[in-house]
Amino acid sequence: MTPSNARLLSSVGLFAAALLLASCERPPIDVVQHGYRGVAMGLVYNPRTVEQLKTINAVPPTLSPEPAAGGPLASSVYKNIQVLDDLNVAQFARLMVAITQWVAPPGESCGYCHGSDMSSDANYRKVVARKMLQMVRYVNSDWKLHVGGTGVTCYTCHRGNGVPQYVWYTDPNPAHLPGMAGNLSGQDSPGINVGLTSLPSDVYSAFLGSDPYELRVISQSALPQDGDHKSIKETEWTYGLMIHISNSLGVNCTYCHNSRAFTSWESSTPQRVTAWYGIRMVRGINNDYLATLTSTFPDNRKGPKGDVAKVNCMTCHQGVYKPLYGISMLKDYPELAGRATAADAAPMAGAAPTAN
Image 1 (spheres, rainbow, N blue to C red):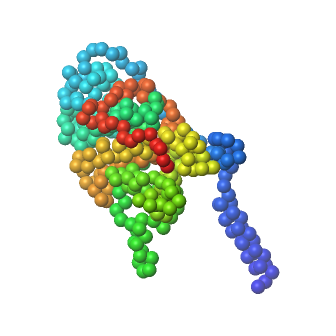
Image 2 (cartoon, helix red, strand yellow):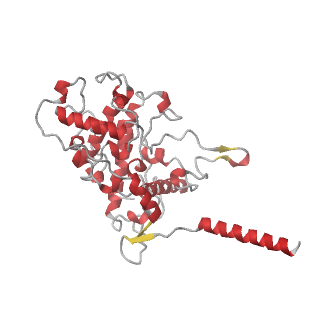
Image 3 (spheres, rainbow, N blue to C red):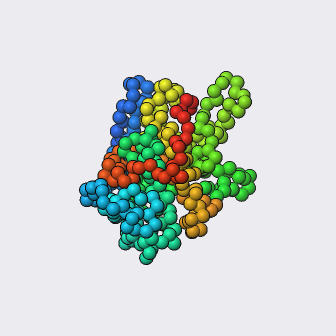
């Protein structure tokens, strides 16, 4: 090899190494103390990502001030009003305009849900929207232990999309590889749902579906018995959901847990209790509202196994610790704060958390 060729190869090697290292460099980060010093209770933020999230979680302009109470009810003027029958005509009209902006895709208007006949239920989207209005009122009235006084509106999830950007369907089948690898049993493949780790990827069905697993990673006795023993795979399932929650809220584990003792409720932050209720709220939404619409949705709107789109933590949070950074749209649209009808408002499930 000539000296010139050697120098060329050396230069190429140095350039390739520099390019590789540059691609692996982590950008500057911010660390915010979230608990006592010395116990790793810090939250790590990427300034570049935080800036992007500000745009995603911007609140749209509020429509004209809330109409005054009184006057004829919308149900006495319009046909087939089943959920918002407690609103007067002005309140009803203003809310319908807002929902159109929140849910209808660009270029669409009232007809996206109603079709040409406003009173008809022929358009499946109208039937779905009615159920979603019941759901929003259910969340705002029955799940204050999670949403607090901030509450939710249709925009919290939809953000101007007909279908929220972040929804999930049941995973059709575990990945199967030829040869000795065999059935991967739903794991050992980098899943986006679990932060590209090899943990079981269908954590939504496992914890947010109709037959949820128990979230626990540590057995409660030295010699586990009577079902107390937790297998390695059950532990992996739980860690997978924790990664999803962390990604959805844009926080690390110490937002809810104390790094000294992750399982201890006494040492945990108040946010852990809020998250405990949030998991159960999501289950209620998926099972009591969305799953009941399975026969309403056309086949092209269902997943590979015939189930409807369901929600998870990312559906509302979209990368920040509080949806829309905690700005309440409900105060501007109090019509969505009321309790759903008795037939549709299920009681809040579960008692306060007592174990991990």
